[in-house]
Amino acid sequence: MVSSLTKVFSGASNVMGGSLVLNPKSRHYPQLFKTYQDVYFAEDAIYMERNSRDFKYRIQIIDSNVEALCDFLRSRSIAGGAGGDGEPVAIKEVFYPKYVTRENYDLCRVKPSSSSPSPASPSSPAIESATRVGGGYGGLFSLTFTSPLASQTFFNNLTCCKGPSLGTNFTLACPFTILAHYGELDWAEGFGVERGLVRVSVGLEEREELVRG
Image (tube, rainbow, N blue to C red):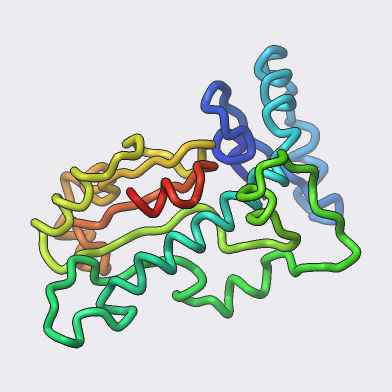
């Protein structure tokens, strides 16, 4: 299993790294293990370890933040029932595992357990209330819009940082399809990836700040 450690595992955006987990029972294990070389720069390893010490705590805050934010946005989307009274609606759909193929995600996410202690948290009541045991649905979601103008207006008025990422301690947003498929927008749309799609990676900000935009 290969996984990036650069994103939310580190969170601080100051080091890059990855992980490879090998199954000793695999027939490929001897060859893969034999060819492995530990060439990770020593100072990068130090920073990665330091950044990851509060990973469990941070991901619980992020999970809680993004779920609240997505609930807020979806209630104002066509998919969430908005616009039925004829009022104009900007958001078409919120793509987040809680609403899309949730049954698949529930099979692998960590379940709450009364025997698992919550990680230590700062004294802020808002942060303490956000901390919970058990896995959420991740810190990433995407939005589609009812028109190109709605997409542009929404993105241009966001007050969070903007850039391509899948996990930092601060919230980032990007026009994902434009960045990833600029030269093949029609091709991407053929697979249901709209050119106006906005992807958001949620961070550790106060929930009220995120909802305000």
